[in-house]
Image (cartoon, rainbow, N blue to C red; front, side, top):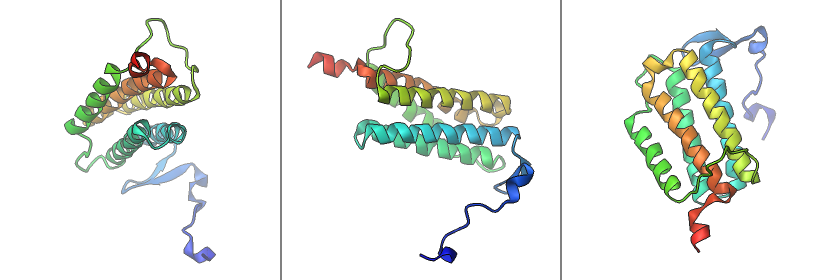
Length: 177
């Protein structure tokens, strides 16, 4: 492939502290909407890191589905005048996954300090960034305009907490075998 076949990575237009957002023109990089998008993007990146560690099994599939869900939330935030794509079905799917993983995971009664396993620690980092994204959504005023997205993000962090405990060795299935 020649250089002309590759799309540009840098335009230099952001050097003034602004960025382009789908149909919104140029926004300052510290705009609340840009902060939300950055936090969600960072959460997805950490989920990707955990997914690379988890492999292609059930957990890897769950983490990929959560990454895709976060990208849909980013689309809703980026295009506030469009109909939201994240809705009740997404919330139900996250809650169902939470129930399935909770059923087969022992949760310690004591305060959890991340780091019992590499995979669990990676998932805990993703969980903490998802929590930051949740705070950013609230700070940017999306609780009223994107209530389902906010609820989905909240439940996603709960799901990641449980999945991290499972990765740390809290699987009921492995203890029963």
